[in-house]
Image (cartoon, rainbow, N blue to C red; front, side, top):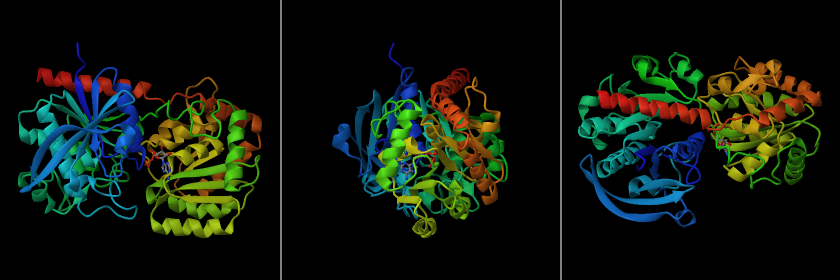
Length: 479
Ligand code: ADP
């Protein structure tokens, strides 16, 4: 029997376009589900995607979308990558840009229209081919459950996943007409949010199930502290809200198979070779002093304030620090000022997948002082590459990193250094613990070798998604 078709939608998918963890998840979760369903991953065909390199070709399907009184021509492209089918939506307004959402400092002014169009184009796909279920991710694809309801004849079920509640897609009220959504949806039970239009609310209100990316974050978002203004709205829909932990792609992030590394490795001897090569390349010294790294978006969420406040203190200890990332200019400047003063800090701005892998392989400790963290992938990658993460105990960090003081060789958990309060004191205290641990090499090695063998793959979580899909499909059949 042919497999049933599922649409999996995201605004970014690795390796085609990536700004953060969503792209990794949209690449690896469909791979994990593909043996059960015929998954079609759908995303915009941004101008910067290298079509030839991935064998992306036109499918010869052209249609017009009518949205807010304008006609937008759409062309459908496709390819098969690593055994998964991809569908790319090309329409000039959405795709002919240099960035996915806009330059690092701000989003494009017409993002509501761009991603409104993405949702309308997906609705057109559902009308052309039968899809049993559509799995939507973040605000950029959150309108689809509403459009399906408004359309009235489609039987496609929907799952909406919140990867980060801090980004909700909030726009002026006037966009409602421009994106072709009837005024009747401008109510507190639907899209209205403090006088504006909130895309994410459409996903929460109209999807058959809502998930977020860790069990702890699923609880946190119901509180004022982490709910970003949607805590009460989420509480109204609590019975269909589930927390399913993200996994990492164990093929792509495996030090023994990673072709991006100086040397692939499966033990500490190989890891030291990578550290040596990395330090030499960037001009840092001290193979036997701890190497701390930070890789990520430079913004408030990632704990940049704490990190910057603590950086001089960390740099004045016997260690090396390597930083890779990009984001808000004020953080670029602050980091640059400190890095200029200390020879043991290596700072790199930008987004560089290959280079990040070499850093994961070289480092001893991964700094992740996020103020909140829906799931976080970096800490899991760091553990599988033989590091101890230093994390603020929130969201997915609390679900994946357990404190080294409770280390148990027989457990399947990963271990690091955790701190409970988001303060620079707490971070510095955690870093002091790192120095102490590093001076007990025998214990440090035992913990990081344990971390290298922890299973952070999609195995368990893909099963959780599959049973959720089955549940809502069966509810549809009975109801
Ligand atoms: P978020 O999705 O909030 O940005 P995650 O920890 O879930 O954070 O995922 C971040 C992903 O992006 C990881 O794979 C991390 O290695 C990668 N990443 C972040 N910043 C950079 C960068 N500047 N260069 C290369 N990879 C990066």
